[in-house]
Amino acid sequence: MAVKLKQDGKWEFLYLKNVVVYYASVLDTKNKYESKEKEFSVLAFVSDEDRETLEDSVRINKQLFKVGKDKNKKRAIKYPEDKYPLVKGLNGIQLTLNEYSKQGKLNSLTVVDKEGQPQTELVGNGSLCNIKCFGYRNQDDLLVVSLTLVQVVDLVPYEGGSSSDYDEELGIKIPKQEPVKEKSPASEFDDDDIPGFDEDDNPFN
Image (cartoon, rainbow, N blue to C red; front, side, top):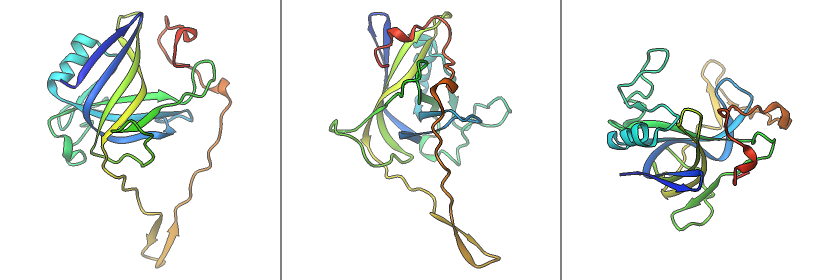
């Protein structure tokens, strides 16, 4: 079993151990889907048994999708097997941490290697990780979680895209333009947490 839930007063901590990850943005934030807000994120894959634990015992407030089977809202396979060859038969779950808290404070995510030392290399697809999330229960008694720690147990080096594109028609390489990072005022970051959670009680802010 990769899933373990620990209680600490009214807070809960969810652990996913030895899970394969894809698209790990854990050393820096990335834009949320169709949003100017940013977040840390990692896509983790668990077994059918662990999925059942997360959905029925933990009652996590997130949807899991089976590779090559489960469809998204657009009725397309969420995680096609050809794009996720290392995790066929497993179930994907997206775990995130907002860049800013509700009070406008900058959140940080702890990322370490297997020895507990700071992880400095980018985490590539197929890496094996231990993941810790902070959680609280919403009004429906579902567990709302946020990333707090990622331990990289077995690193697969990140292989990014080329730093330039080749235009065959013109016969030249065109350097990729890096987007300019904009720091938005904290007031623009509206918290979408479900009512009932008091940020003042969150020990991670």
